[in-house]
Image (cartoon, rainbow, N blue to C red; front, side, top):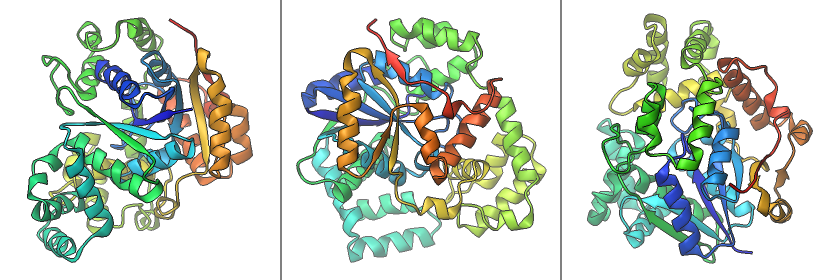
Length: 401
């Protein structure tokens, strides 16, 4: 069976995601599309607007055949590790094809950049060191070094989807043989578009409109058969209170002792010092992040560091390989056969597919499970729900529409 894999967040799911799923299936001629999706927390170090069960159901309604979890220890990471762990999971489930969005279709140039990142020739290392010494962050310095060696890549590397695509290709070079096929899909619209006036806005714009209560405006960019589900989620308070989460996050840092500050997951002492000062003087999260970020330490890195600390993700945990257990979140009713297919593929790759919440107890001593439990419990608190849902939530079985 031919399986095509996608790494996603769907925060929230919108028409652009549906288009990607359709194009991925078409271009790969896959028998099934498998999505590995972040859970309660996202790659940028923020809590998701909707719980993973609802986002998984939307993905299944939108064209995915099965959805598995990308746990917090893998999701709340820089683009390189986010992509690395996502690809590792998909290949471990037997995916022979991988699809991702791009801002342009220069796949050969992206593959050349990925090889450069893997091999790091002397000239690359020289420009990288000089750029970082000038104050650039590692991602910006790497882009500068790549542009120096591959001038045609200069514009290519300043687009978010292209950067992630580069990381996916790098991970494929690390884990996969040449038998894995890649299927880039040209993204329509801008990734970080904040306005809903565009034909195909990004998830950021849809998310912003939903949080502001502009449901009618936001729903124009969500598949019609998902409108009621999205509205019900907001009306039944399945959406977390971000004020509660913000207060809990800042409270965590204000009660930290000196020893805890020395063990933040981010190794930068300068960031630790700025973050310590900001959390003691600022009462709003956005002000803390603004105070702690710099030209070389972007806001996303600050948020990831804060979220990692909040969830108890240590620096040592970040050095661990991807988890060997994979939690199945949902499957289309017509494709229940995928449960056995994915389970056998996982076993052949040394992984374990968890298909029932109760099975998680077998692995509860694993560091990633402990972090995931904390993340889901904090998320449930912000939704006004009891704790322990990681161990009780059932598998989403999506019937035909």
